[in-house]
Structure formats: C-alpha cells, structure tokens
Image 1 (cartoon, helix red, strand yellow):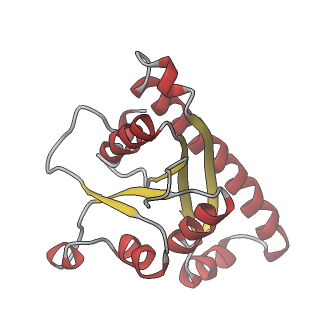
Image 2 (cartoon, helix red, strand yellow):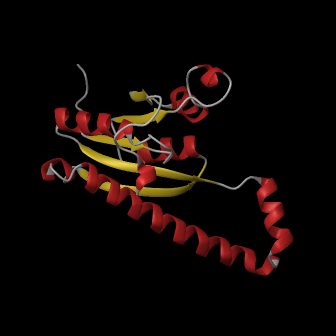
Length: 172
C-alpha cells in the first residue's frame, strides 16, 4: 500500500525559473489533499569567504554582524517566498491555504533539506534542477544528487525548462 501524502516539501534555490517546480508541488498537494512547506537554504559561507571577512571586519564584531546579516536575509527571503506563493495562487485561495510553512535556514542545502523533511514529517520532496556545469552534472544537480542518495522518501526532481517560463522567483 502506498502511504498517503500529507505534507509536501518544496525546496527551492531561488534561481531563475526554479519556481517552475512549485507548480508540481501545488499539483501534488491538490491531488493528495496535502499541505505544502516551502524551504530555502542559505548556504554556509566557505572557509575562504570567512577568511576574507576576517580581513575586513574586526574579529570581535564578526559574529554580531553575521547574525544581523543572516536575520535580515532570512526575513527578506521569507517575504519573497510569501509574495511568490500569494502571486502564484492568487486565483486559488483554497490551495493558498495549503501553504502552511515558509522556512529559510542556514547550512548545507542537502543536509537541511533532509533535516526539514524529517522535522516537518514530509512525505515527499519536490525540487528543481537547473543542470549547471559539466553535462548538467550528469543530468542532476549536486544538491539533488546528495539528497537522493540519503533520503528514504519519494523525491521528485523537476527538470527546469530552457529559457523563460511564465513564472520566476527572480521577478519578486
């Protein structure tokens, strides 16, 4: 017996056209009478970026500035995702009610997707892949691949169309 889908996690990197996969999350939620959680992970800065920061900012103030900067960025991205979902579902208030959570976290994207899937008790994950780099990184993105290797729940990897779609998070 196939388990009932009650919670859908839509993970987005906010890249151009990544919102295309949102329609798949919406479709899945409608068909299964499920809730939708939107997730964006702000990638932790690399050690090189941290070293550069230390050259320009007093080490005593780095933690405070980092916290303030991350809090501001998280708020802006949460608002952007909220506006996007409201705009995308403006003609469907019932489906908009299915969007029960907007989550923005800092960390390793693959690990945080896995953590949120467990924390929110999501039954499936839907994410796009934009296929950058060496032959589209063998047809999947690095994060998508790392999630697939470790997750024990269904994952839908939505190939993003070439060119422009009629929706994009970049417009918000």
